Amino acid sequence: MSGNELRVKAVVFDWAGTVIDFGCCAPASVFRRVFEQKGLEITARQAREPMGLAKRAHIAAVLAMPEVYQAWTDKFGEVPTDAEVDALYREFLPLQKQVLSDHCDLIPGVAELVEKLRSRQIAVGGTTGYTRELMSVVTPAAAEQGYAPDAEICSDEVREGRPAPWMIFEIAQRTNVYPMSCVVKVDDTPVGIAAGHAAGTWTVAVTDTGNEMGLTLAEYDALSEAEKEERRTAIVARFESVKPHFFVRSVTELPDVLTKINAKLAAGERP
Image (cartoon, rainbow, N blue to C red; front, top):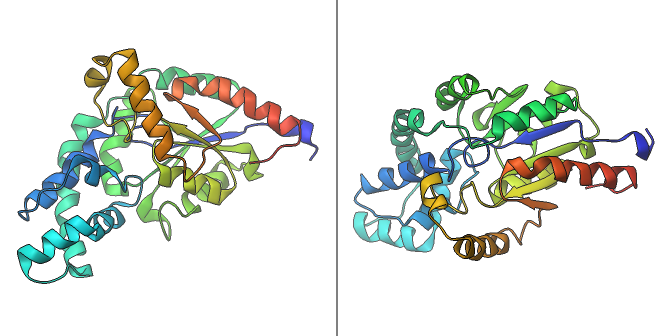
């Protein structure tokens, strides 16, 4: 296949913070509640830092943070083990499912974006740290609002979630898209961008609608442009370790990015 024939054929979106749930608020609030039920208070930043991992791995990552690890040890007189992670995860799942229905609103412009992608014969995929049980709430709610990806994979349907590339590979297989340089991964978390790199795709990081900004739409709209830009600068710095190919404020800016990627592909560039 010559360079001129290569073009973007699939876009793989994250869910919360990228296409639904402005600010990625549903999981962050529940992670804090699970620890509060054990008598431990974690900060919003601690709850959000591992976002993008499969949820059990996320809980393990929070518990491994030095401050949380020490607080647990001080409170219970012993270090946390895998059994404690499993117990916290069992408590997390029903709580998360309970609040999800209130956090399924599409991020503004997503439905219109999908129409544009399909008009360009670009497949739409979705990957998530949510389990299939949790997505049983999200998927139909999103479909009612006009967002239904051609293929979606959950973290419990592959050997390992992000930053491993397996969910993205599975989307590529189900949509019959290859080579991976024709795939674009869009995510609001560094671990999601790392998964895109691992899969050999182009990567696009979302700054304003996702976990790193961490605000509801109303809270975000209340910020001045200067405040938004200050937060944006800090967010870009937090993505530095994974070096996304592109940044967008929201996925509505994606069409211009895809045009740039197509030009790079035509010029012989690869992710």
